[in-house]
Image (cartoon, rainbow, N blue to C red; front, side):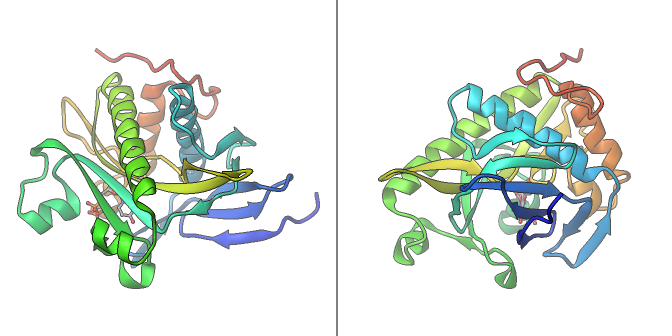
Length: 253
Ligand code: UDP
């Protein structure tokens, strides 16, 4: 096969030019990084699990009418996505206090928040993705007011969908991060969920035991990351040797 043109290499994924104009191939690597890449390791199988889990969540979102960049999974490590212009924001939605919110506001991890809280960080590794307000976003033109209204509504829909899917398999969605891109259909601009949705970008706790099933296992040295992600995939019925069946999670007692 002809060598594909690499467009971008990130910490956990590499992007290649897709077969058709306007498409991109996302290759999921096994690299795990934390604390702005200060901590790095290669975790065998992580890329395969994230590829399949992200496919599962993106397909499910598509089925409830939330637009995403996902087109199809190509193989165990690659998926075809629509090329889009990424809005330079990390959109974080929180249902329970954890991580940087707990530190910043002195709220114990695991405290249920009175309502979902949406936060925005400016995507810039050199600056450590700083928290920004809608004032910064408007003043620096990173997104318009219409975009911000749409982003908030998309983020809350993703939250409701993900919370429900995870609850059905005995997992609490504590928080997550999404990225949003613009796609152009003729003269019209639409926003779509882009990047990935996986245990790399969510906090997932077992409802009964509180066991962490997300990247905090790596960040905080809590055991095997592959075991944690495999458990999420197993509960959702999307283990790699078992073709994903979106919408058919297995209930746990
Ligand atoms: N997150 C992410 N990428 C980032 C920063 C955060 O995917 O660059 C996710 C993280 O996994 C968690 C949520 O966003 O699910 C909130 O993260 P937080 O702000 O608490 O930061 P952290 O404690 O991870 O530094």
